[in-house]
Length: 445
Ligand code: ADP
Ligand code: MG
Image 1: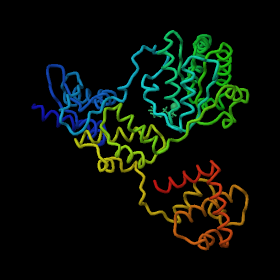
Image 2 (image 1 turned 180 degrees about the horizontal axis):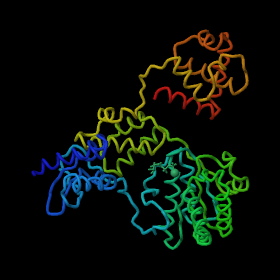
Image 3 (image 1 turned 90 degrees about the vertical axis):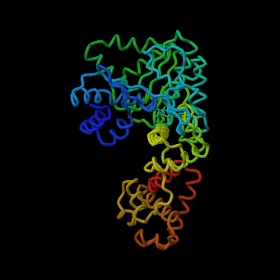
């Protein structure tokens, strides 16, 4: 069979194993460069691509050749040298900027998570500074260091950057990164196999413990207990502890008080959602690491239009865009971004209706419209009512009176009072600001 024919067969077979999307995105762009003896060589457009296919689809490809086509051969994926004049820059592996010192695998550290790859802005300045300070090696100063912030805002990256820096500067120290979930699972396993002594000594004979997502300990009594003793042992022997969480200690009431109060002994630092400028800087930095040529204009466009504050998702969108450009052999541009990221972009021109707003507000607060129309004045009802009135007024061209009618015939001065009260709160009440921002975002997504 000719190579071209073989490849056609492969694609046909592939559809039996993978979705059309996967076939067209990952399998089709491969080129069969050689079938020789017991080795089939496939060429991927670039390294990022090669890694992905190797990790996810190599076994399937082997199966297709061996079983589907009865070609008893091994499969090798290589990358081609990109022609110099190619419009699209190569996508390098995101791990291009890695540290060059040795870290023992037992530390569980990821070498990509280093300070050099981290963009500092006002949203994360404080936590960044705290992690830097800790990685100077003055362990007593900020101990424990407790970092809190929303999902995908860089907590894990920062805490590991501190660990990596310590490994770089003090290779003899023992650093251990662990998520609270893994800690719990290991503990359960050790209990079952009666190896608690081993478990304990693993966690108590280290110099720096990076304990990620501590909020998952909440409600897990046995793990909390075990962690409590680990914490105390390390703390008393002046070992550094860094914790992360998506909430502050006081916002995790299910966690024992003695644990929460200990978390507050050292320094509590927060990470906020990135501003548009910070998002742009992160995108540009990541593009740099990926060896992508991204114009400032496109960087800013992405920062302004990708509707997420989660940096993981932001980077995901960039990877998607570059993959798309690469497959279609087109240069990166705003037009291409619009095409390939359609679903991820904020749509500013979307029409919002009264119904959308009411649905969003009642859904968010989990209240019924009939309650909002009623005379009830408890906070759980009046706050959503006021918020709904405020958003209706600010997003739609609708009179105070009309708003009043929507809410069981309230008169316009009541509506005005509600709207003004939210306006005022928007200026200095963080919680309200967040509620409004979340609701507005949901309206335009
Ligand atoms: P969290 O632990 O808060 O959920 P992560 O630390 O896992 O978030 O970060 C999510 C992704 O975003 C990671 O790939 C991380 O490298 C990246 N990231 C987060 N913050 C920054 C930043 N300030 N600069 C560069 N990359 C960042
Ligand atoms: Mg994390």
